Length: 228
Image (cartoon, rainbow, N blue to C red; front, side, top):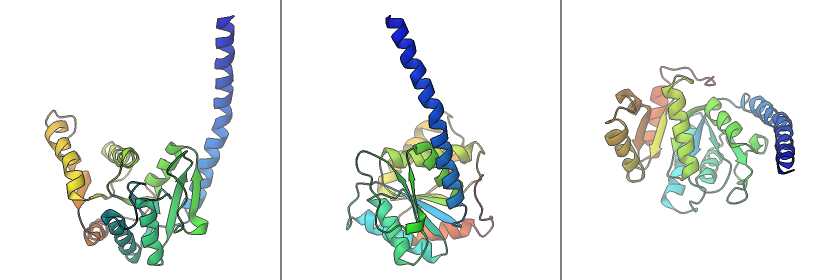
């Protein structure tokens, strides 16, 4: 009897998994349709826990503002903290402000600086990550937690393996990021788990002007287009 119950439960899971494919497909279709109409954008990542008035919150506002003034839209994860700051900066500059919201039991809620017609909702992190990577012309990575690192290493892996075209990946905050980058250089590179040229994928800066300079310099010789 225990075996029969176990098999019954397993079959129900398999059935639910099959139906989930339609919801996943719907999120992809809706995301592709909306994002393909927005134009060149730069994604800004960082902690949802950074409060207004904090140095990196205000730096994210300034960075997003200058990115928008340079002619790019700004994409964030749509929530509070650094995400809110990114959308706020784009909004202040009159630029495109996109929010890719994720349904979470804590922390996440839409911020008020997203363009009403450019707010997308996702249940699946992996679908949302595809939208970031496909439609971003660069990643600006402010101090954050696990989610921020997830996006950072996802992009680095896809570029390293030639699954997507190279684009600028800019870490903002030398004091915050230098320990991680030093570990990559002194440990991962030393044991040859990465190649020296992989270190060229990322830049570390401390100002909004440096971010825009790197993005503009990169696209003087490269085409603005979706990444795959």
